[in-house]
Structure formats: structure tokens, C-alpha cells
Length: 127
Picture 1 (cartoon, rainbow, N blue to C red):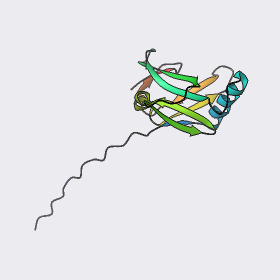
Picture 2: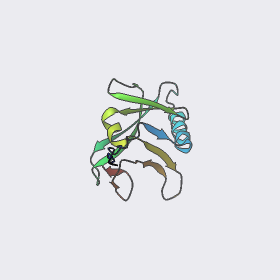
Picture 3: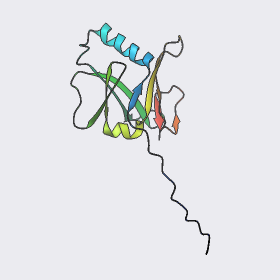
Picture 4: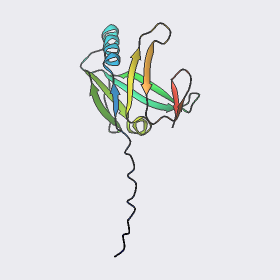
């Protein structure tokens, strides 16, 4: 009787899906929606990635009153409705958006687990 072990194939980690917002980022987005007079019930936040920037891709965050299309995925966090197109989600799945309100580093911060590098200002990334 031989004691042979079969090597089990390594399980590949499934990349996380979706986009998340911290409570601080959601509060800032809701503040801007209110300040700009956008209708709160029909305003979406479109988050994505586009080619460009010093590291290959740039983050995009904008308001969308049209709503999602068949090419989009939707999520909701802390009362904010989020749209991300499927291609951007491939590069940004599992990203959490936070907001810094310091004097020198005020703005949204993208914590992207798929990014292999980013620029110094944090607005672009590579995968």
C-alpha cells in the first residue's frame, strides 16, 4: 500500500466585486447633492476608470441623473446609489471610496485592491 498524496489544485482567489463607500464619503456625496440642488431620489453617483493618467488609468466620480444602463452594475451604500460600468468594475472590483477632509489632502480616496501601483496624488492607478 503506497501513501501517495495527490496535490490539490490551488484555489484561485476570486476578486472582490462591487464598489463601496465609507460613511464619511457618503456624507460628503449627499452634502454635494443637496448643495447642488440635485434631486436626491434620482441622482446616482457614477464611479469608474478611464484610460489615461500617469499610471495608466484614472478614477472617475461624477453625478448621473439618467440612471444605469444594461452595461452597468448598481450598488447602494449609506443612502448613496452607485453606478459602475462593467468594464470599470473589472479593474476596480472591491474598491472602497473614502473622503479625506484635511487641509492639504481634501478629496475622495480610492482604496483599490486590484491596483498594482498608483501615482503620488492617488488619482490614477495601474493593474
